[in-house]
Length: 234
Image 1 (spheres, rainbow, N blue to C red):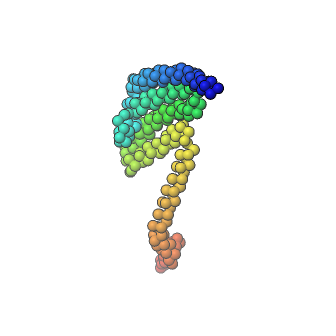
Image 2 (cartoon, one colour):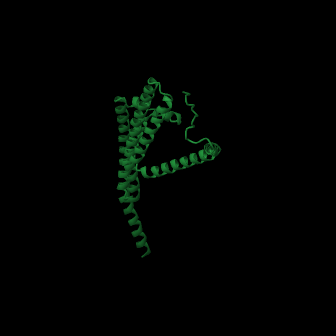
Image 3 (cartoon, rainbow, N blue to C red):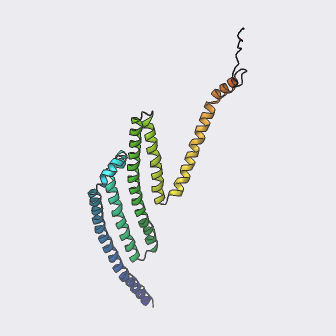
């Protein structure tokens, strides 16, 4: 009896292994094919972006310079190519995990797969938004200098920063992080405003006291002083 139970358990285990091995081989094949397709997609995306001179736009927008300052040795075109590569890899991983009946893994990878295109679109928004912001800032600075307006460079930089804040908010909203970032931004702005109000309030107490004291002195009213005028002697 014990021998029969042992043989039955061994038979069941071999049956499970026999069912699992084809699925495992299929998952491995899917991953290998996905890896090859991912490399081809990355090459095609980089070539296509280079062909339409997208790298020139990213260079003029300052995004590539920002990446180099951060220690990255790639440009924005390669970033988009890398995102496309991982999009295909994750899609292949999702299909492979689905073939192995790994529901939780499939669901998790599926969420990441849906998030990657949002990141790619947000990067494109940042590139064109930064290019437009730099163009507007430069054009405004040149115009103000030609019209001999003081602080032309400062006004141009303020315009650039204002547009960039708006563009970043759009990009984050595209990624689904708009509500969190907006709340954090409002908190930061409120904290900065409160800090400036306290700084000017505490620092300007003496000046405000002097102004109030000067205005409250007799003879310092707003009424104009009258002068005695002598009538001509007839």
